[in-house]
Image 1 (cartoon, rainbow, N blue to C red):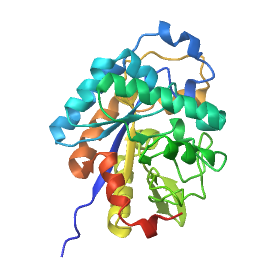
Image 2: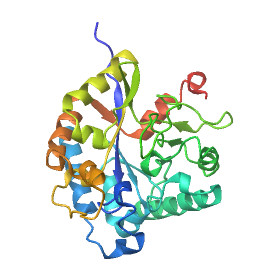
Image 3: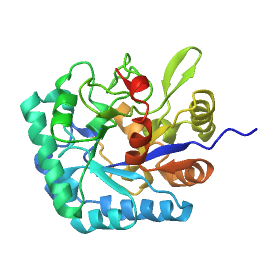
Image 4: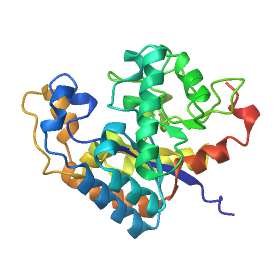
Length: 290
């Protein structure tokens, strides 16, 4: 007897090529307004790719991007996708104190809701930067009325990671229904490995992601949480020559292959919006309790 098909969470972190964590020390935020933006064309390509596969997704979008691309925000919603918050300008959560974080997520939400005319209920921290250093982040998200977050990478990584966090959906606060949906990891040789998209999907063979998602769906019986960025399908984007070699390798490798791999992925597995995944995962409250 075949196992039931599990719908996985598909998400896009909407930021432009110059707003990524890899370049945060070589491109100043004060210079962003003078740089050529490419995010609108890339998001429109992604929307067409999703339409071709008949899948819906969540677009975690920077308030900075939404402020300049209001029509694009409305298009995302009109085509059946969820619009959610990625903060205002990609500052990592652990660089804030609670008051600063409160201001950041409030500003981003206001811009997104004004642009698209819909309620924003989901949040993803830039660079998965909610971790053991930010116990107040979930309190603030809950108090501001967010229903879910997808802000944790339960692995060790040089840029991010909360290795001790649960691998699958959990409720971080005993007094709140707020659900955290960590990005997907798989178990290889007894160790957790990142397998939820982004650079790992772009650089590694497609077979690795297929194996990882099948492991999560079939062995664990849980939905995978997958993400990528619009700039990852854009091989013509400007090159940042003064960035560290490691950052350039991570950022530019296989940009020309990404769209094709995404096409394979969205056709091979079942995908849905993150708010739908969060609602389903929240049903089992005892299992999700932290």
